[in-house]
Image (cartoon, rainbow, N blue to C red; front, side):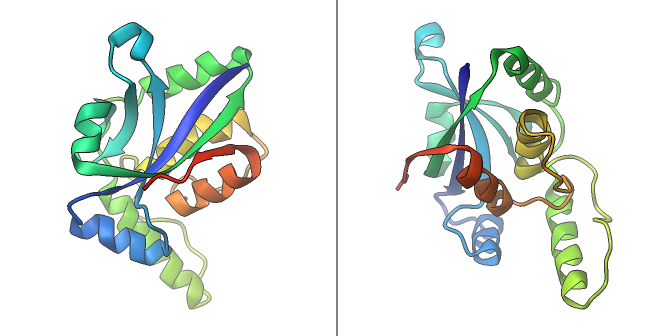
Length: 172
């Protein structure tokens, strides 16, 4: 078995979209990411695989923590037989644009749902952080999950991890 860490963070400069997402989800974070332990190989404590405004890619711990506060961390156990499939899936989305408009689409879908209207997210181009985690980690590891990756939020990812993962810290 291999271990993968999934974390939740927020912008430490209270950027508007981070604050709005925190308020909307009623959580102290606005973002989720995958952490890789790279100290042995690269000398840095970690590399974060993330979908931020710059797009999907890798970021060193030093750079990530300059503008983000880590709020929660979880560990999940992954059979070695699919661990590399997950890593490859994550790697293949590097360079994709961040799905900022997807977040607006989630708001539209949620508002429509409250009005009794069922619809799909009309703004699904690119990927946001929770879609990245769900599509390239959780749905591969747990194919029985039936979330729509185009409307999943970091709060949904946390709810999944509360059932299948192990919380390893409370962050800040």
